[in-house]
Amino acid sequence: MAQTTAAQPALVLASASPRRLDLLAQVGVTPDRVDPADIDETPLRDETPRRHALRLAQEKARAVAARAPGDFVLAADTVVAVGRRILPKAETQADVLYCLKLLSGRNHKVFTGVTLIAPDGREGSRLVETKVGFKRLSDAERDAYVASGQWRGKAGGYGVQGLAGGFITDLQGSYPSVVGLPLYETLNLLHGLGYRG
Ligand SMILES: Cc1cn([C@H]2C[C@H](O)[C@@H](COP(=O)(O)OP(=O)(O)OP(=O)(O)O)O2)c(=O)[nH]c1=O
Image 1 (tube, rainbow, N blue to C red):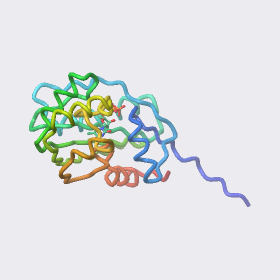
Image 2 (tube, protein in one colour; image 1 turned 45 degrees about the vertical axis):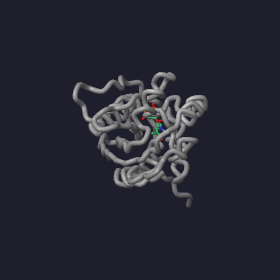
Image 3 (cartoon, rainbow, N blue to C red; image 1 turned 30 degrees about the horizontal axis):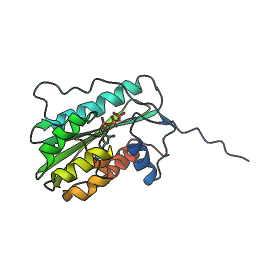
């Protein structure tokens, strides 16, 4: 006799980032829907980069869970910081020039917060910190990178998965977390809260 199995709750990725979808695909996770959250991403006064990344991941997940009852909702936020200073998500040439000036010849940190909300409302979060060394850029390297446009929409004005990978002298932590989603921690959250995919 044929067995009927209860339908699995859907997985909603609350992110507009194509990188996050690609990273999930890399480990065999396919969201049923993509529904980006539209929240205010302005840092609070005196908010540390770590707290900022975690708060935004939680707020993105909660905003989307409110319109996806009974589903798993996954969200993340990636923040690049030099000391306590949170770098912008680069949208203009002025943004990327500001970022590259701060990053050139220095170490910085990348924080990614990830939050999963289960169909029963249980919530789990992780915060992953990665230390990244960046070479000192010549004017020619800086100008070529700005001309590439690869910085657009990226936290800190660079994408380690593209040309800027050639600027990285050292990376301690999680590479996928820098690209936008810490895979080991995300899989732990999914399995821990009962997602069976
Ligand atoms: C540092 C770094 C960031 N990024 C990207 C990842 C994120 O897409 C982006 C950081 O901005 P986020 O606000 O984390 O994400 P997003 O605006 O792209 O999407 P959403 O808020 O809907 O989830 O920067 C890279 O792709 N490579 C890198 O090396």
